[in-house]
Length: 339
Image (cartoon, rainbow, N blue to C red):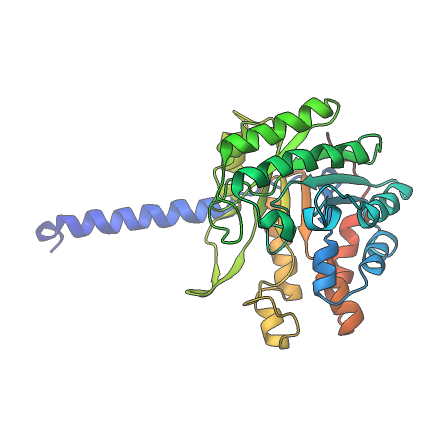
């Protein structure tokens, strides 16, 4: 029978080989010893407020209850420059000062595209400008932020923009690689003592394209996402996918970190008061532990979780402490951030 169907034999052999190869990839484990991994979080005042939280209480609990010492903060343009050429750093100063008092470290994200929905945090007055004028205003805003915090030793890196070359963000100016280079060059001229960082989408982004301009590249890692056309879907990549991409990208950027690890649900739309089933579809305690195990297998030694505001919301508003308590041991391990 097989003599009559040689292509069937070849097809079966290819499928079997592919299956074995994929299984081997999933079994590869590049985990580092736990004491060699630094864990931190992205903290967003805007996201805490969207959840209806007192953002100061949320940050304080993150510091004093969970013991978090490594943070990625966002200098949201619409918060620090609500009107043209009038800066207000009061809210960001408070965050920086609280972290500094406790001996923490800060990656300061600056620019127009920054962590958390809606990705581009443009003040209304700047959104009304054409692209060229808005870019000029950005180049005036960046030095103001650098000048505000360059003398604070807690700030260890400048992250310029967040996934700036990802073209899928409807509310943002289209990616402009030349302008990104200008932003980075400007920040570097102002402060040559700190590494420059930007980020790329871990699954869909071009790591080399973004990494060629910086000292540190941050990448995201999401497992379960929601899209209007596809509902919930899981990325099929094994941990080795991120390890191999990182090894390849190191030809152009010396250090790569996991800057955004999914540690919260991904909901349809922006509603948060959803059913327990909806919350747990992409963010149950079991999935939380699963994604942590997965992230360790990628071999990254610096990991920032996204979701601390959500854990706090569950704890204080729903009396669900599982995620908060599961996260605590991560931050009990003494670790330092490599600059």
